[in-house]
Each structure stands twice: as structure tokens, then as C-alpha cells.
Length: 564
Image (cartoon, rainbow, N blue to C red; front, side, top):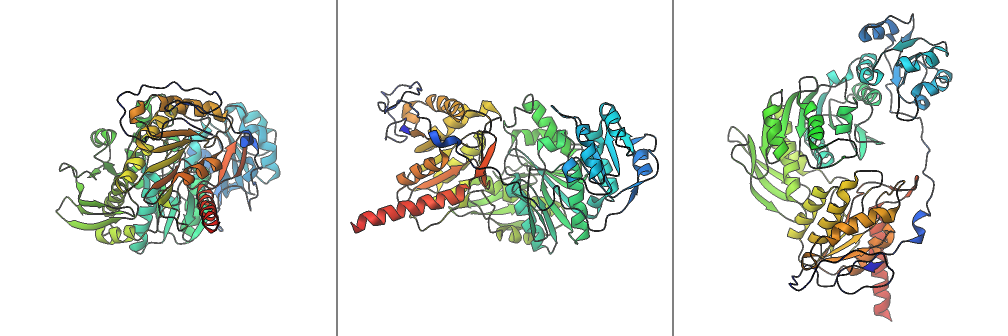
């Protein structure tokens, strides 16, 4: 690892010039940018693949649905007698009585696995004309439609008896803040006496049962099964994250949310969306009668203001910045290192005492969004606000790690330029000393954000240690080179110290070694994640555990030195 900026922090230097990044070994002059590879980066452990049963939880008492009813919904001829009690798109997760949805893919077709599905007890196969012949070879009834993915959600809802109709469904979308908002909404629902469910990036919850999430929004087959289990177990309300992928790929087909929430929009997933307009239109789908009944929209976001005009369902606006034209606004905001307090002022002049249980202005917005959402859903807003204030925290979202150190140490999921900037600015406001960040960018994902993220870290932190996130199939140093190039674009007099360390654990140890009383250490990008994907192999890695261990080790070394 080598330093790539002087120790001047962000102090101005009118005589300094921009530096050009290089990957030559050895230390450079102040302001030069150098990097060294890490030989151990590819020493990884195999991913733990153990699981009780593939796929999402299923209801204990499924309702048999005649295949003829499913065919009628598709508008195709009935494949004959028979019944379905479940549906899945994963041949490994087929259970007896399931419809196996054999979908076309980028490289393989689900019909390649129909024999496996049949062996596991599939009752029928849903596929497209391309997969029909292979499906028919199994001897199972076959439902053929041109767009099986597009029809899968409605069939799942039909098979499970439209379970979402019996739940208060709140769907939250936006580039940042979905996870935090979902946890806060769930906290408000619990305070109102509801039995709740939660679906999102970190985990899924059915009452008090916790289930690991594989993606932000489950596939439609899994989502409807989850709703059915929730209904069966007496859950009344569910708060869930709705990604743009979910909207485009039909994962929420069969859902009509009682309240849809829009937090914000900034560049992300540009490897999936053609441009920002395409990204916005994906999110905007949620605010149509097909997807929701009511909407709650952030007035402070430029895309939110556009959505307020274009949504085709009734919408309520909110402004954490206190804009008088918003339906709800935050006033008397006071921000601290542990959270914020404010007054939520409603359209009728009601004044609600509110507290954001996490620090930062953006969490004032997340908290206000949750209060307004619950008010729109018919929950008393003060009851909702009190429940939100009692939420103990959100895994990997400005999560504090306290090992007795005299400085603030937090882990956050920020992995987009806007999110990194927001978190750093928020932490700067509550930091008396220096602000340090460890940051990487994921491989096989949007490459356009790497330079801007490196620049944001270099500009806004006193120390930025650039490291690996989940490089996946990409060369970690190629990712770091792009981040480093972004850091180099920041004039030296505006740039903090920049270091490159490909090994994430070593990067965390390096920033901890720099921390002094009154400083803040931020480990960004992975948040709640418990593994690191390198060259297609996932090894156990939890930023929170690694950070705690680094702090404890540094303290032990310091104490040992004092004794000597």
C-alpha cells in the first residue's frame, strides 16, 4: 500500500498542481498517486451453499388450483386435468405439485432443466414456444405463452389465492434509502399494533422470523409465496423495497401496493438502464394504478417533483428541507452524531414530534418519509413517529461499531456517488477531528460511477483508502485504477490523503491506525454483507467484524507499547 497524497489533509495549497496516477512501485513525492497490488487478494474460501430447502418459504396449507383456471387466465387451451399448489422459476426449488416456470435466459433456457423439475414432482410446466417441445417431452402438462416471465407473477398470485390483498402493502423505491425507510416503516407499524413483515436487501422477516435475502426484491414466484406465508401466520402489514430491476422484470407483478414511496433518484444501475430517463420510467411504473393505490413522493428530489406531476395515482409530497409547497415538511431540525430531532408539519397544520434514529440529514428525509407514509396508510402519525424513533438501528446503515475506541467508527452500505457524498457530509458535521473513509467499487456493475466515487472520497474525506469491494470477475486493480483516476482529478489543494490497498481487511486496519480521538472512521460500500466475491468465489467477510477486530488489535498494540 502506498500513500497518494500529502499529509496536508484538505488544506489549500495554491501552488499545487494536479497529479497523474501511476502504478509504479515505491513512495512518490507529495501529491503523487501510486498503487501496489495485493498478492493475497485471490486467496478465498468457497461460498457456503448449505440451505434447508431451496427457494422461498411456502405456506403450510396451499390451496390447489386447477390447471384449467391457470390456462384460462393465460388465454390458452387447458392442458388437461391436474392441480397446482405452488410455482417456482428455479428447477432446484421445485416441490411436488408446483408449476415450474421454464424461462428463457441470456445463456440458458429454463427448459434445459425440465427433467430435474419433473423428477422433483412438478405438476406442470409454464414456458414459451422455444421451450415447449422440451417441456412436452417430460409428459407433464404444459402451459405455453409468448411471455412466461411477464405472466408468472399473476399466476403466482392466483395459485396462492392473491395473498397480498389481505395485507397492507407498502412498497418503497428510490436509489438510496430504501432499506432504512422500510425498517422505519415497519417500526411505525409495530408501534401501531400491527403484526408485520419486511422484505428487502438485508433480510426478509415474517413476524419475528428472519430469512436471508438473495436480492432486494424477490422474484414474483417467491414474493407471492412469502405473502401467502405471512397471511397464514397472521401478518397484517408488510414493508418492502421495490427495485427498478423488480419493476422492469415483473417481480412485483400481481402486487398492488396500498402505498408506494419514492425517496430519490441518482445515477445507478447504468449497466442495466440505458440512461437516466429509462431509470426514471422504471421507477415511475410504481405510481400507476396497476402497481399502487396511493403515493408518497420526496419533493426535495428533482425527479420526485417530476413524479408529482406525472403520477397517475393520488400522491402526497414531503420535504425534509422544509419547502412550504410540500404537503408535509420538517421544521426545527437538530442533527447530532446519534440521530436527529425535528417537527413534522402536516397539511392540516398538525405538528408531530419526530426523531430519526440514525444520523445525517438524509435520515431526516427517510424518517419523514416513513411518518408520512404511515399517516397516508391510516396510522396515527404521532404513534408512527414514536415507533420509528424506537427502531434500534438498521444493519449496515451508519451502523456504529464500538470497541471502546475514542473515535466514531461506522459501517454503511453507501456504494453510489450521491450516497457516499451524503454520508461523508453528514459525518463531517458531527466530527471534531479528521474524517477517514475506506471505499471500493463492485465489479461487473456500473463502471461509470468508479471515477466519481473515488473523487468524492478524495474531496470530502481527510483520508480515503481505496480498496476492493466485490470485484467479482474483474481485476481488482483495474477497478482501483478507475477510482484512482477520479481521485487524481481532484486538485491537490482540495484533496485529502489517498491510499490504495487492494486487500480490504488491510485497508480497514490502515485507516484504524490513523484514527485519533475525535475522528470518524467510515467503512463504506458493503454494509450488512457478510461475504466478499472475488473471481467468482465468495469468502466470509463482514465489515463490522473486521472493523471491530482492527480496533481491538490497534488498542492491544498501543497498550503493549505503553507497558514496554
